[in-house]
Image (spheres, helix red, strand yellow):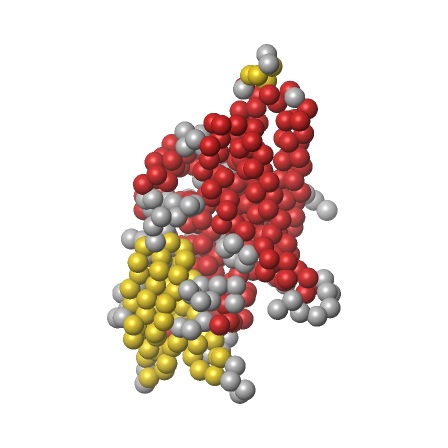
Length: 387
């Protein structure tokens, strides 16, 4: 087995790290304070090829592969979670469904503009009463003549209510199967579709410079041909999309862990108490050693899961494991990093405070840690069903 990254993957890491440190880091705190989504930074990231990472060049993508994509998100999250979230959701949840399930016409219509950063796409899944139980969606889409008429509401949807938002892939109930089970489909809804409105959500604990929206469909009308894939395939499409999304969140956890570790190490090596750096005390050096250990394990497993995705293997179990482990590694790392900073770690002047807040979503979005443990249990042969 060869664990070395390719030259291209190393170049990707250096390019994204340089960009994150020079372009994002100087203004990340200000954008966080203002809860401001940056159109300029998002378009600059698109110019680097960070949207459409796994999309072929004929559709406008950079086609760098899933390992490089994980590295991209990792390096952005090492500096700022909000901009990592914009790229992660823009790729896995926005571009992903259209690329993997769209018709050739839909791909040609949407992917070039999404990969170039002219538009962002979002995935309308979560509802006020349908979070972990995504199959209980109440949003409906009724086929009337040559149009779908959509009614319902979505919430907590990343990239869905910003100036760059161009399209939403919406999961909706399009009918019922034999026995009354809902037929779930996904439909492409342009931002300017009649009857569609989006409201930006403010007051978030984390990812405050990332855009989050609440979506409303009031007799929203879209053409019949906007159905994504086959009617009734929406639930399968959603599960496949979440597999890719979980790799993205895992990469955010990995990058955030690395960033927190570096902040903690730098602070501990320079903070003097009792006449010596606090890193020299065994209790603190062990904290840093444990952080480095878990980060290394997380990186190796995430890259393996991304490699499996590149080989077109099924990764539901591995994606769940990677997302669960990396998000919880970050929790442990930011906790210890704040502890090492002491009182200063609680002040907004110190970057670790933002890392501490940003981590919290990673154990909730793309499947809570509790749901992921259920997914893993099913795949390793645990008898019975927890749900």
